[in-house]
Amino acid sequence: MLLTANDKVGNLIEGLESGADDYLTKPFHPQELRARLRVGLRMLELESNLVEARENLRFKANHDALTLIWNRGAAGTRTEPRTKRRQLRGRPTGGY
Image: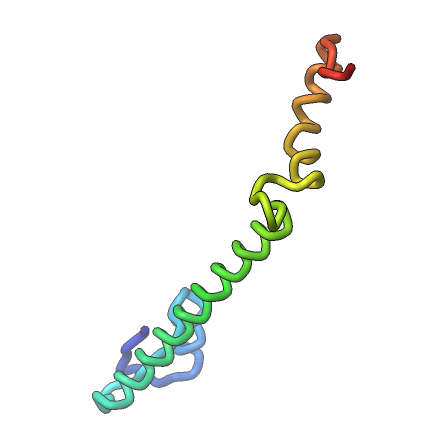
């Protein structure tokens, strides 16, 4: 949150581009500050929910729903680099 006495548009844009998510100009009203902070908290909560949902989807995409172990696709992508390394070194890959 950027709090400034300077209300020139160029300076506000520079502040926002430097990393501020929002701004208030002085003098400010305390209720406006609280409202803007609540908006920021809502955004953080939404981002947290989105990250959690993404991780849940990633888990479901890589694990069997019944056993919760890696599914065939996930197991293949995890063992493929190891198999290629063994082949490059001329070692058997564990086949029968």
